[in-house]
Length: 117
Image 1 (cartoon, rainbow, N blue to C red):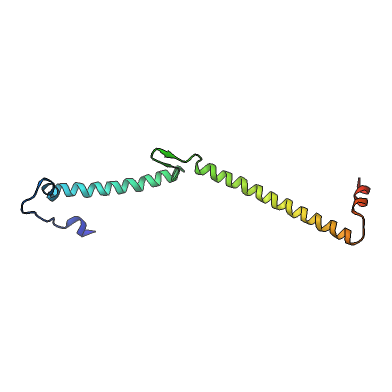
Image 2 (tube, one colour; image 1 turned 45 degrees about the horizontal axis):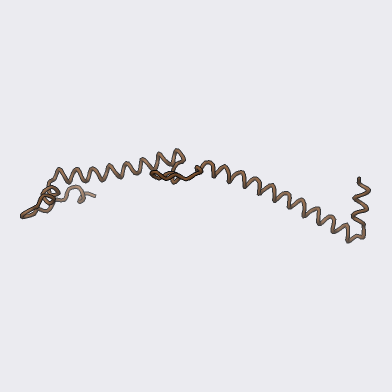
């Protein structure tokens, strides 16, 4: 890092306009300062966008239709529905096993269900 800031710049024998401009110490200081300011801006922007939940949902003029919060809410809702469906399937399997055992014992399932009504 030390070398990037304090290294001496090469001197040109017969510089053109751009070489003379880039060989000036104030100009190179400004270039280095601009690079650092740009890097700091990018880091602060990423932190700010992440904290507001907009990271990777908006880039320039383009925006994702649903926000990240909406997607995570939908995922929670779907996960709950999946758990409910799993419980229902377990209940139906238990009922199927019970009815199957009843049939194996020789009982009439229809007759017993009609008696319960």
